[in-house]
Length: 115
Ligand code: 5GP
Ligand code: ZN
Image (tube, rainbow, N blue to C red):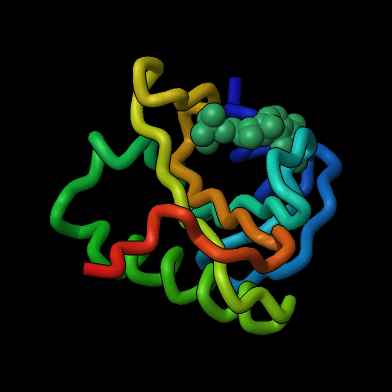
């Protein structure tokens, strides 16, 4: 049986898709952990970052550029891009995906190094 994200990318399961092209789909996370929380997902089933092979260079680059473009379109000036890898890394869905998180109010970053 196909995985959930394969079903979403093939439109066999509903989701809020905000962008699609021949190799990636971007849709809203069903349980958002930020004001803006999108998932950038390759159409090809790759299990995780730990399962990447040399022929995946192009799709990894595509995920990052797609996230950057969507962030710009949505007016996010700052954001986080996260790959969870494996159960210990918090990965629940075994189909590679890049989390795009943002939309928090701007504030001073207490961790900023002033040295
Ligand atoms: P992971 O922990 O594997 O990196 O992240 C999986 C993400 O997928 C979670 O943030 C979770 O909320 C989201 N998710 C799980 N099932 C579905 C679903 O059926 N539809 C959508 N849109 N998101 C999902
Ligand atoms: Zn899949």
